[in-house]
Every structure is written in structure tokens, then in C-alpha cells.
Amino acid sequence: MTVTGLDAETKTVAPSARSRPGRDARSPGSTWPATCVDRETIQTRLTGAPFTTLRGGRPRGEHQFGVRLLLDWLEQLPGDSWQDRWLASGVEAAGRAWRDVPKNWLSKRGMATDFQRDAFFRALLLAVAADVIRPSVSLLVVANWRRGALPNALAQCRDTAAFTRLRELCSGDPAISRAAATRISYRTAIIVAAK
Image (tube, rainbow, N blue to C red):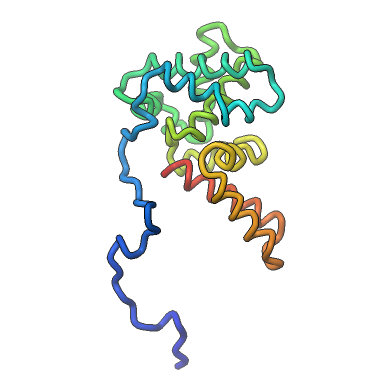
């Protein structure tokens, strides 16, 4: 029998030795600084830089409208934090049909146009990028954001240096195809957004 590196003796390493300095693992829960701030603070943050660069050429008013819609929806739900309200919405339990939950809320308020829905869902992406809410990994896997929207939002608003480095590493490795690099970026974005 051949012995490989995988068969080598396993050593137990203390969690502090495994993690990168300054990057402690986040504990699961529904409270962290970005999800516990008041509405005005969130609205100001999501309608300012760097989040305004994600408008995709859309007018600033549309961007602000979407943020107001999102916060109106979350605010009417029970909870002490924005994450509590997100969890109370029923979106997580809806799986692939998750978009129907806020769409139904919008429709009941006479806001069923594509413009209104698009503004809402773009604002939701901003809230994820700003770490205001953290959808579960299982929801993020089926969320079906528009092409590259989640990794691009996180790269612009959450951790520019890390996503830039990831793209450099992928493009510098001839064994990693462009399609594989896109999948790597998206999967990394899912982990960052959920944790």
C-alpha cells in the first residue's frame, strides 16, 4: 500500500491558529452592528457611496425609491434587527419561490410594475452587500441574482481587495478557465454574504 500526504498523521490545531489574524469567524445569530442600526442610518448608507455605483446607470431617484421600498417592507415585520425582520418575512422558507414573498407584499400595495419590483430587488442586493441582512447559504444558492450581481456588489462594497485578489489568482492560473473563475467568484460571494 502506498502512503500519500493524505494518510499523514492528523494534528489538531487550535481555532485561533487556523484563522487569519483579524478575521475571527462570525457567530451565527441575528445581531451584528450593521443589522442593528436605525432606518435613517441604513437609508443614508445604502444611498451613498459605494452603493450608488451599483445603480447601473439608473437615476438616483429610482435607487432611493428601491431602498425606501425595501425598508418599508422590512420595517413592518416583527423583530429587533433588520436580520430578525428578514427571517420573519418567510423568504428563507420559500426556497426557489423566495421572490414571491416580497412581490406579494408589493402587489398588495399597488406596486406591481417591473420598475417597482426591480428597484426593490436591487435595493435588497445592496442590503446584502452592506451586511444589513445575511440570507442563508441555501437561499443564496437558489437566489438567481442577475449575471454577476452578487460578486460584483460584494467586490465593490464589502471587500474590494479580497475579490480583486481572487480574480487575479484565477486569471493568473492557466488551469482555471474563465467559466470556472466565474463560478469561484460566485461561490465565494455566497459564503461572504451568508457569513
